[in-house]
Length: 224
Image (cartoon, rainbow, N blue to C red; front, side):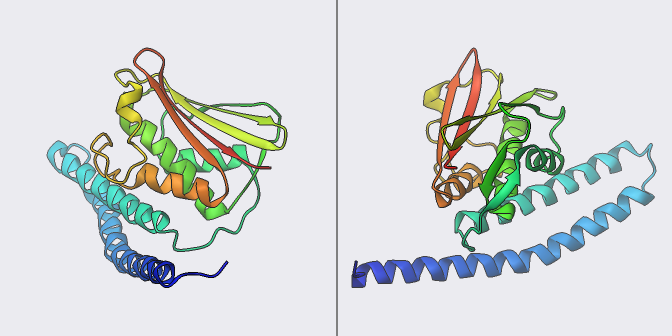
């Protein structure tokens, strides 16, 4: 199929935008890393009983985490790198993502087979699952449990994330995959949009459902 001039121009513009986003992310990560190191040092030297200073330090650490998250989401949303899939252990992947997203308590995982494998790009997969767990952490109440269930149908594998967080209806969540949806928590503007990009880049499908009584569910399905 021959690419038209308009299609070629659009592709070039997207590639240029992706390159700019990647460069901005690279330049932002250095000062963010420095601030993170300063925060770590302050955590070591500040008196434990200085409540006000500790509160401000906590805010600083939270802002650094949020900024790193925004930068990472932007890079993955622009798909700055082509996925290189390989078979990954789903339990190990989710455990690493839960640790990096600081989700407490640890998600309850239920798999239809002892060693579920999923074929994904390792870096993009970690970002995908970390984002989903962080999303549920941000919309839920402290200590709210997230249940992760995986099962296979034919060669495809489906992974469902669910939390009983109340107050959401389907009409509230249908737009969450749209960049900078007003329904998203602060700092999450490209969070689920980048998740959808990664899923689609692996020829997968993603769906969201919500009910005021049963909670919020996100299900992703990947071919075998």
